[in-house]
Image 1: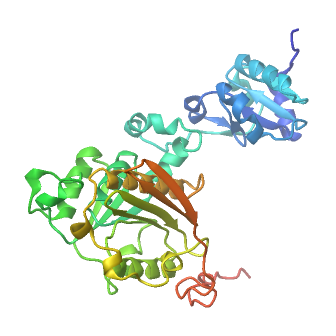
Image 2 (image 1 turned 30 degrees about the vertical axis):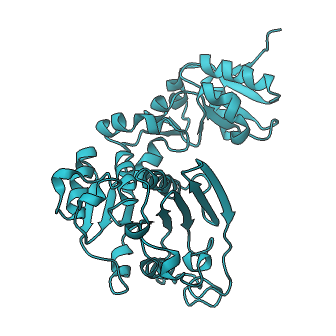
Image 3 (image 1 turned 180 degrees about the vertical axis):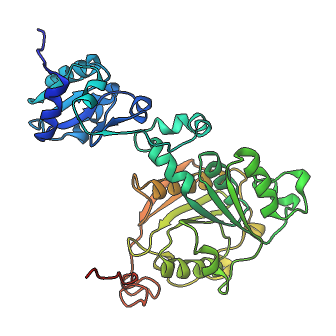
Length: 375
């Protein structure tokens, strides 16, 4: 049985759009980027069956589909009718006729250079990213506290995927015992400052990445200065004192932290988004004694473990920058490398937390500068 589809001219399509029809463009992203109907939703033909429910959950809603000339939009419309949509129209006309009839049109924006389009082509194909999302990544500033075990994989994948500015905070130099897990460095850089070695590796991977080097140890005196200009903080520290200092400053300045820790065969990761979930002090109200949390230099660590946790930290950064998906805020993800298992526990924000609790001086909304009143 052949499904009959209502097809309209460009003039009729423009009139329907003005009457409230939801315009859906079933072309490919590359075509969309060359210019598209203003206010339309991009839904490539192959994605129609799987994503139409998100784009148009009401099957009675008036939908106007178009492509370049009407062939693909006709097929998409027929599929929607099969799925139960009752008010679907396809524009059967060259898309240029839409503009000739005065239809609203958005000219292409040069979000990415041709070189960037080539480099990130596999990433911009993802519907949740596209060129707009890639532009967000390129404009983002991410600070890595530590250019060692956790900072190494994070730096590599953040740079490779297009994070535009990466800050490195580390006052140490490359030692031979680092090379078993700190893949940002090499044997030819023994004795070199880690921030300098990290810059060489990052720039070799992606010359566009801006690397800001902070060859200093994070402490209570410099923490706010260090984190102030960044969008997301990646915590690769290895001691509780520094984590508490970082946490309190991040809560004050409302900076999200992607926290990771490693110990022998075990790794943990969570994300702290100030006042949208718990902070580090909610998770650890009291600092554990040193004998219960020895450093890697004392307890040891599997070389591959920071790679797993560091890449998960990078994944959290991408979601925070893009504003998509579900972060680990309020969830602690634990990885057991010996058994290759993941477990998860909930973390709750403590209303009595001295850093982010209800009585915290930082709990009040940040005051914005007063705007002049028009008279």
